[in-house]
Every structure is written in structure tokens, then in C-alpha cells.
Length: 116
Image 1 (spheres, helix red, strand yellow):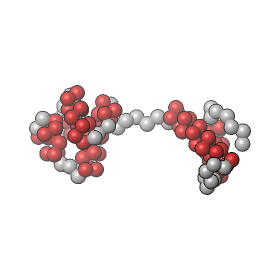
Image 2 (cartoon, helix red, strand yellow):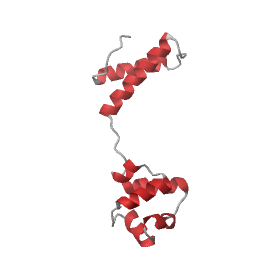
Image 3 (tube, helix red, strand yellow):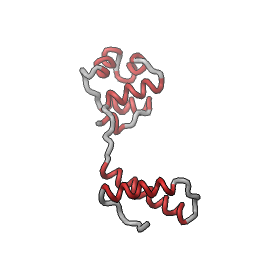
Image 4 (spheres, helix red, strand yellow):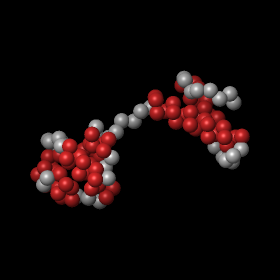
């Protein structure tokens, strides 16, 4: 296969087909090297053309709460009490910079999700 930048959807699909053919290639072989290069090109193309926006801040908090088995009362101390937690989770109040910073530090919620 002629290696070149992926510029079109047709190029992208051809690269995906070739990756599928080479999927079981052994590392440090010609096919393994080709697989590595094609994968890198496909990832670059996908980052440019299929951007995934960060989740909504409230959804990010709810998702992390679910992951950690937390209740609303568990995050209340971090964001200023039960009423404030309820207002945030029900979208009646926005997050402050301090709340975002504290949620990030305490629960490891990605800052870019909280800032969205």
C-alpha cells in the first residue's frame, strides 16, 4: 500500500480496510510497521474530523457520582451544602470556579468537563 496522508473519506475507509487486514501483524515486521503507521494516520484524521465534545458539567458530575457510588449528600460538602448540590444537579445554579476546582481535586472529574 502506498502510504500517504488521509485527506478524504475514501482515503480513510481504505486505511481502515488495510488496518483490518493487518490487524494480527507481528510487531517489528514490515506489516507490523505498516499497521503502526496507518493507525497513527487514522487517529490523526479522526481527531480532525470526528471531534468529541466534553460532556456537560452536570452530566460529568453525575457520571462520576455513579462510578464512585456517591449520593448527592456526598458531594454537598464540596460544593457548599445540600441545597446548593441540589440546585447544581438540577441545573438551577451554575458551578463557580471554586466548585469546579474542588470537584476536580476531590473526585478527579476532568477539569475540561467541568469547564464546558
